Image (cartoon, rainbow, N blue to C red; front, top):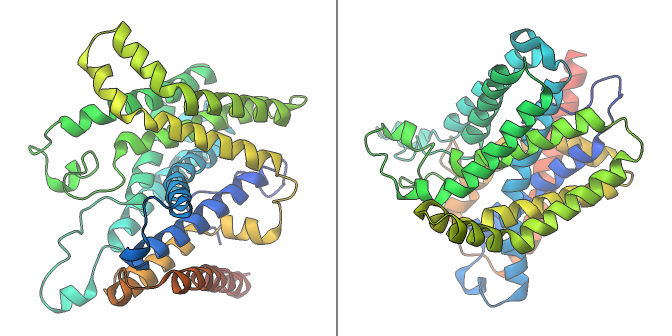
Length: 364
């Protein structure tokens, strides 16, 4: 059963063994689970901003979602490239549309609160945009961009994807200054965080387009000699440039082209640095690709959607309204949170993988 957020980057024939992508997706979902668990339940007295351990944890948690969006964009577009010239006839287009709509639907479904409905009220945060809605819309937008450019050279598509990433990251601060009150809340929540949305299209779609752009270079050059060595060196080099020089470069642009757009963009130049970290993580996983091709990593990476859904139900009380955060919000000690997070990860993944095996046996 293919119940992960996007399809696996290798087909049944195993001709493209990009198993490091599944391992990277497994790492991202596990980091997301522990990050949500700790953030929701750790008592406030342990959240010491001057603690190196807490700083490192918080920083790694901040990297998780960018990695997840980048990997999702990579996987979906890599499969799209297999029959690039087919346009609407590309089977991945219809599958992608169905999956994108499904992710949006599940995202809203998880925000239903039955306990409130039984009491005659609705969840006031129902239309807030979270990760699944943003991922679903990102897939639909990538399909739209593909249909606009498939008649041209593949590099036109890649240049467009890369340009969108740069534009979204540069314009994020400007978008935050605009007023979208003329739009209905359900629509404006995809653009602005004023109503509580966490994952808005700007800038998060930029990470998905980055992954999509990288996937194109993998598809085009994967069979070439020493490809992985070159991929590691290129991603590390670009990653380092973004981490250490993105702020200076945006500042230079602001001085060179003296318009408010670039001066405003300077405040959000951290997005480019964050992207640099994502590329560095990619490089690390490429280096470890022959170690991380273990079945447990691959199985977790291919079942991220089920894992995500189950963790939101148990931790946040999605749909039911009764989750761990309802009873233990910011109340657990450090020891209890660490032990609880380990148990939480093992329990969620075990339940999903065992259920998946039973499902396969039932319908095989």
